[in-house]
Image (cartoon, rainbow, N blue to C red; front, side, top):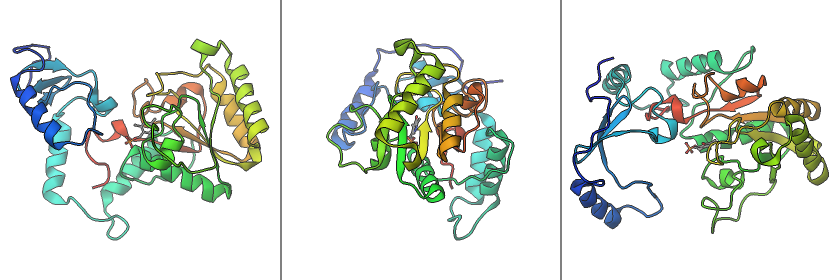
Length: 295
Ligand SMILES: *Cc1c(COP(=O)(O)O)cnc(C)c1O
């Protein structure tokens, strides 16, 4: 592929450079401090794996918007499709006046998500909203209220998904009250707990049965590879045992693939490595290359 920017790092000023420093001052005066950033280097454009900052420094993008830019910055096909769509139709409300692209996305998702059965998708505004909708679907389907998520889980920053997110800091600090009927249960963390997948699943199930009761549970949420929790990969066999427990107890198994899905682990969805088919999949980040998925 020909890139409009050479695919190599090149620094031409100090980092951050003078234009970034000037932008940082404007930013501190105008942007809420709630929108924190890791590096105060302001980007101007990108191509492939390289970002070019406002001072002309070329940097290798190892952040990629937490994996959003899975096929690189400004891919010519994506840019052309976005430009064509912008000139054609940018907004209707699907629930009022539908359009083909929504249907095509749903058809494509049915093709690439795990499971050999008829599937249906809903497109919403963000990962957190996808998780919230999975909660609603599981509750309506089961007629139960309890939602389980795993220790070290991250499921989003809305009030409900904060409650499903494990760590107290930074997301939950000073927040709340959180919704009830949401519980964290022990996960498989082989690097720290040394348990096999089956042993860790037995610990999870014992915890659920002791504290909550499987017949109360609407949905079990799991990131097949935990992202913000520290790239934690449960031991082999863990999800197979959890899947069986969910089947035996009428619990909806939800794979939160918002961070690990969309081809980032060698399969379309990371749960495929565990040989397990979820009932619901939430997917976001990598799907849209930074464009909203719901024009
Ligand atoms: C980022 C993330 C979310 C939330 O997605 P947003 O689009 O930021 O709302 C939910 N679950 C996981 C696993 C994530 O990594």
